[in-house]
Length: 267
Image (cartoon, rainbow, N blue to C red):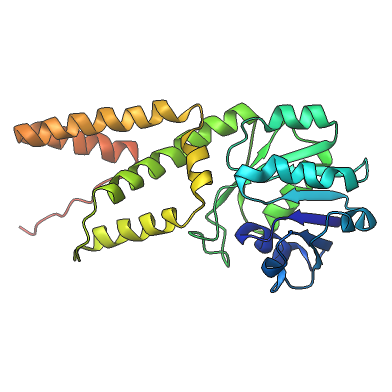
């Protein structure tokens, strides 16, 4: 298949690396400096070059803020039978955009990024394919994600954004609050260092991406739940209520399906 990838960022170059041995792949980015290290892939900086390539599938991997703008840049040079696709982490507005453009489309979301995931082993990672997508497009990404041993889920556009609010907004918000409370001191604990590593990885992401995930219409309710639980925990700490703390910890362990090991003393 002839595949055009839009954007030579972290995800765009990773996708080309994964696909370039089994497909004829081209990558488009107006910044030629980003294309210096792309391997076994046709490099394009002028959208007019796309017309001669005649891609059968376009994978839009640009920063979320420019997803629709990137489509608008290349659509005049695409054949009518080309399938549009995106990997956006928030799908707000994309359903209507695809409907209005009239192209076949497939929308997916690899639920990981090069910042955190072990790209060499993705067997513990997940991907979402939007169920309203074109049949052939879905088949392609099922094969692609399956070859990477990703666990695949199918959701509607609405279901995807609801799940994103839960699975991303909660850890993102918690990590940002943690980082907002930090002082510029060296702290020894292992737990602290793990939290700090997560915070540094999160803050290396694009500001617009973080904002869009947190501005997801389903995020507020999730963050409000954090506020309520934190308020309750603060009251327990203030009152030094051991029984409530024990009950709270028991509820939390149950929520994450964690069973605390009991150590039996020798008699």
